[in-house]
Image (tube, rainbow, N blue to C red; front, top):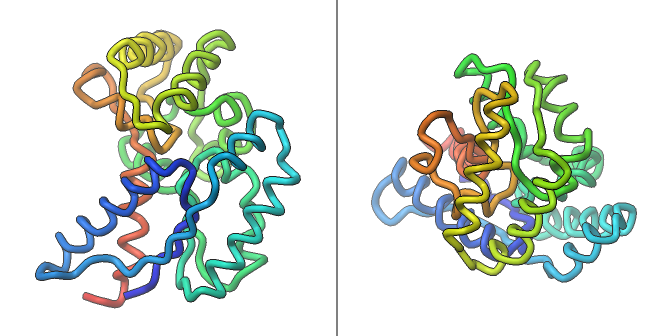
Length: 234
């Protein structure tokens, strides 16, 4: 079994869910007492929040790339990051270390393509919703167009993530806000909604928006990680 190097702490809520899901899915495949081999680097979310709020992406790159090297030196066989947002500065991982890096967007893009969809909405932090680095990847690799909420709605989505979800605070009023914003995206032509932040699935469930598929980047990422980690095991 390959050792999964996890860049975590972005947030601790997402990291805990990744750890839980990885172990459950490995055990479901292998049975017995088997769980995943993991190496978790828990980053200080205070640093991440500072970089995002201040657009300090050069500083973020130095910080994250240092952690990439730490994970490799610690024995990771594959590498993942539990934050959609911080993938912005992880575009050079495969130049830094000779191990696979599973980009969080790719399993989601593959699943959307499998379902035959071409235009989907995305919810996430403001940098994810407004920047081109995620949208370009979906279009270039999968031919999928991403549409974002309005500027006003982006502020709402982002605030709920940073003020509530990363603290494990699940509010019904926030769920209602996400449903309303998602329905606006559907009216603009979206055929589904990407939960483009690794905590959003804790708030927004498929039954909350039954008229369209939700693409949970966390679970889809975990499935791809387990596939690779167990590739030669069974």
